[in-house]
Length: 83
Image (tube, rainbow, N blue to C red):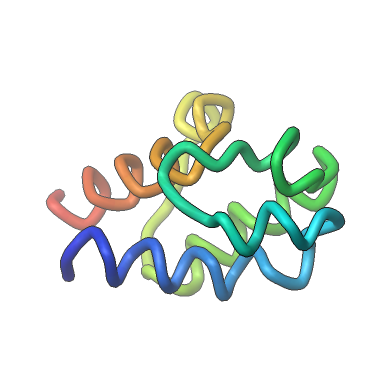
């Protein structure tokens, strides 16, 4: 799976939780979940759970805390898929 495929799948996962649709239109690695998409912290936990289901991986608490942008999430997913 390449980076573009991961980002496309991530966009589908976060879409139901996004409060700021303009941020979704400009969805890229630099997109910040909290600031650009205005996903609240409770929903961010749901995003992590959905990512785990979608990619069949487990994200530990340290990784979860570092998942602030789309790029962070992509990097975590790539690392987990490589193991």
